Image 1 (tube, rainbow, N blue to C red):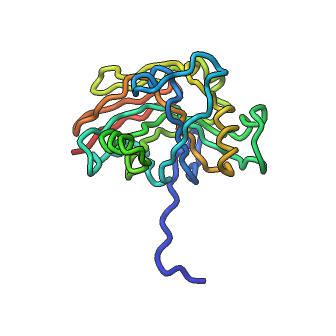
Image 2: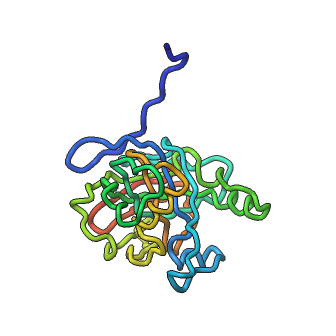
Length: 235
């Protein structure tokens, strides 16, 4: 059967060592660092037993922006916020059913660093009405991301530092051992809700220090010395 319109291109991310990663879906984790949960006015668990369920939302696959392409300041907001995050790329489909925690890591192909850009004023308005806040998170160009680095080259995640500089000043910084839910736990929880597939990205949540971005701001998001995404917010 002939398509009536041209098929849109599949969004792709370059991978260190060669090749690209075609993006299927983008899952995002909310409030996965206790200090960020508190700065957003939410309670943070003191123990693992108090964690409850993680919070998830999604972005469209074509929200990614790769390379050093500038990020357009989005429409309908005057309060664009940055959230620097570990990005996990899945290279295998999960088996049917709920994925056991101990079987989760073999699904991971690579890691990177990205920004979960947020129209904070739209999010606040939605929260005030107890409504969904998809428009605050899933807009065009809302997921700038670095190139991906194969997991075999990264090693242990916990001691790696996640950081973000804006105009040369550090805004966010934390090690990954401060995540409330780690990577295999998040994949386990996601598998209860979705069929995880090769090509999926997971943005793992942000530490404290989120703040507004202005047109002309330059950013540098880093995952230790593993991955880096530099860019500018265009006017």
